[in-house]
Length: 393
Image 1 (spheres, rainbow, N blue to C red):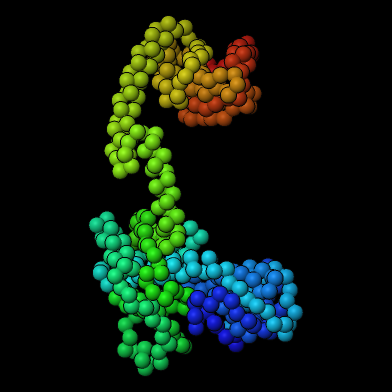
Image 2 (image 1 turned 30 degrees about the horizontal axis):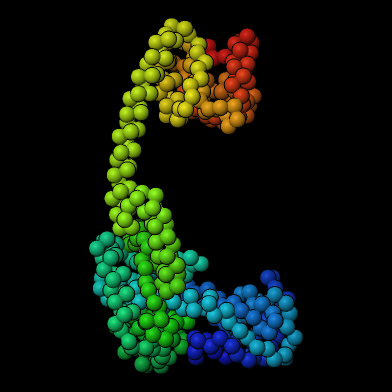
């Protein structure tokens, strides 16, 4: 049985060990040592990486009671090796896992929330609670968790109680446990059965930032980051907000209000633009009144503008004629809107898309899409279709 150095001291970075076996595996070479500081994946925490001598350790798993190090190259059995943990990765995982314990423990103490799911991802940590929280509780949970980091100096306690001792300990666990139980306690915040690696004191978590909360089954799923991840996240947010601040000529803490004002102004401008467009479309529709089939090009229109233009011309033309409206240019292609009152455009539009490198669709009597073709090619297609009698009728 491999000696688990990571359970004795999570801050061990370098250790000496003997290779007990090395066999070819599915992802590399599976190495078993007589002792290891490499944490194997488990309890929601990913495995450690690093090196055994000059050989990279890619993954670490527990299989049939043995800790298996998947390595990039083989290592001779009985050899003595020096193991070196990727400390940046290990400490990051410790910060995230310890922060999760503190948040889960406090949510349990404050509102009776049970942690029913935990994932320590490459970017964020997620916790699933079995009951909903309000936005006010969400904010209070973050504040309380950080105050714990700042004000509680008690070291993290890790014990291996006997079955008799365990009966008198109140601790969190997602399932019924058998065998030797490892208890990790953050005094004043959490007491939980856990096999993972943790910091020595709450202060080493550094910072806990709750990112989001959304409904999940009967409760909520919370995303969070801790320590170095939290610092990088907030630095990135600050960098982006500073750019926005400069672009809006607004103070850093006034960008939200400035953006709201600009959005309101933009909405008013859009409304005015639509009114002006509709007036322009009405004038165009009068020009084509009673002409039947219409192929029309108008610069600078959005898909919604094309739809409104096509509808206005159709109403003016009346009858069974069709209206095809295009907007764009020869270099980037054209958007289109084609309508026919009570018509069926499906086969015609399929031919149009095939002939002019287009895509789009819609209802039988109205379709929208885009073409990668020139204005001359579009006009030629409609002229040929009219001669051949394949235009909508």
